[in-house]
Image 1 (cartoon, one colour):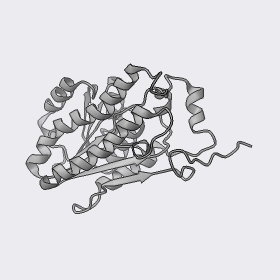
Image 2 (cartoon, rainbow, N blue to C red; image 1 turned 135 degrees about the vertical axis):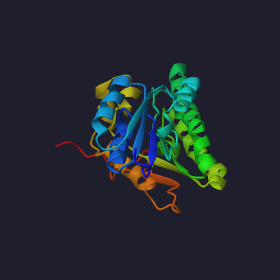
Image 3 (tube, rainbow, N blue to C red; image 1 turned 30 degrees about the horizontal axis):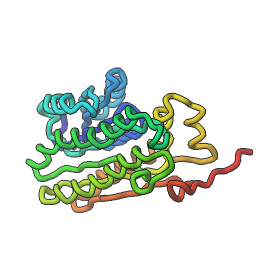
Image 4 (tube, rainbow, N blue to C red; image 1 turned 120 degrees about the vertical axis):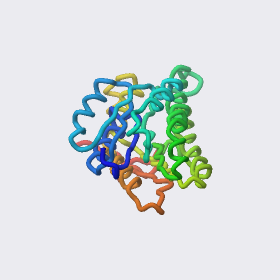
Length: 256
């Protein structure tokens, strides 16, 4: 491992924005700790990137506090000095009003999007505090800044990410640790397929008539944030596709 290389730990690294971020950070020379639940995909990504940088993988579910703490504490010594944490893991489940929503969907979103982010951050922070340096990037959402019909709990969890990022930035300021919250609007990943329980036709309609952001678009912004000069912190950033002006104002083109 190059002693001058920075180390980035990425949750949700096996798909979407997390995977795109891993590829871009590897190309930029960051050594990586890739975290996710899919062991096969983690190993595939490790093989893909190992010619560029040093890669370690951790298979755990961010919702499992004990597993998070045990996995990160067991990192090989050369990977323990994390410089950048990208909290990309998260999910949306269901799109029903509060009176008919599934309680298990609520638990999934709260446990992953809020508690999981906190567990991983808590596990990584001691090394950052000790060296008085580090950068935490939390993946928020436009849904954390504006609410929409049938999105109550998902919006609440992303609002929590927004608020937690502000609070972390305040708490960690004395330690010289940067905290960024990147808030994308419509991004076409497996997000909607997961939300609609594998219903591809319903998921496709979310992006109908629109050119949404890609995972690569968001990853490029994350890379920009973590490569700013030491004195520059991208604290909050809202990223929208041109066709989207707000959560409910979307310019959908009619197909010809």
